[in-house]
Structures are given as C-alpha cells and as structure tokens.
Image 1 (cartoon, helix red, strand yellow):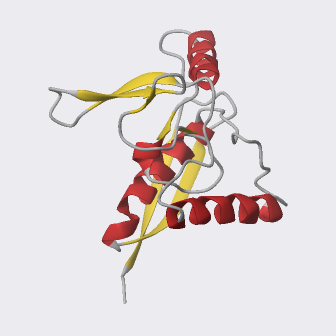
Image 2 (image 1 turned 120 degrees about the horizontal axis):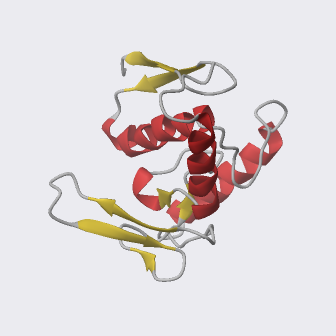
Length: 153
C-alpha cells in the first residue's frame, strides 16, 4: 500500500488575497508525472487561470467523468491524441539546461502525442501539456497591473 502525503502551498501576491493549495499525493511511481502536472495546474489557479475546457470546480463532476473517460480510452488506444489544444506555442527546457522540447499546437509536441492545455481539468502526464498563450498573456497582464513590489493586498 502506498503512503500518502500532502503538498501544501501558500501563494501570496494574488490581488484576490492569498491562495491556499492543498493536494493529496501518493508515492506510486507511475503517477509521478500526473502529480507534477497537478501541482503546476493548481499554481495556475492561484494565478487567476480557469480550466480549459472550462469545468466549474463545484458541480462539474459529470464533465470531469467524460474527460477522464476520454483520457483513459486514449491510453488504451496506443496513446492516440483525443485532445489537441490550439494556441500553445512554447519550449520546455530540459533539467540539464542543455536541450529542450518544442511544445506547439501547430508543429507538434516533442514529448508526446497530446498537446493539452496546462489548465485541462483532469490530471495528465506533464509532458503532454503546456500553458496556452492567451493564459500566459493574461497572467503577465495581471502581474504587470500589480506594479513593482506590490503584494496584491
């Protein structure tokens, strides 16, 4: 049986006040990539981002079940992409800093067959996702509005 641990983060600087993020994470190695995605995804919420496609946090269980089924069917179908989000253009730098991976809804995902938005409402391996350009620009605009040295409060 896998031990569970909690990841807890307090994010300050959000103009709506501090955001508290809590996650329950297991230590099953095959789930590691999904937990990395989940942590970064939750930081996205702390930075004002909503799900893509939009699914409300409360009352969105049916939509999440449908998306989970689509995700799980795709893995059983040799990983054929069932979700390809338009508007993603980026580059993820490898841990060693010597190389990286193109992330493009036009040119493809150098790390997998999916190109899913970071704010996809169910967990997926982080290599299959990247932030959508319009959401990146939204964060940048909101941080710029805070001004230098602002705490958001």
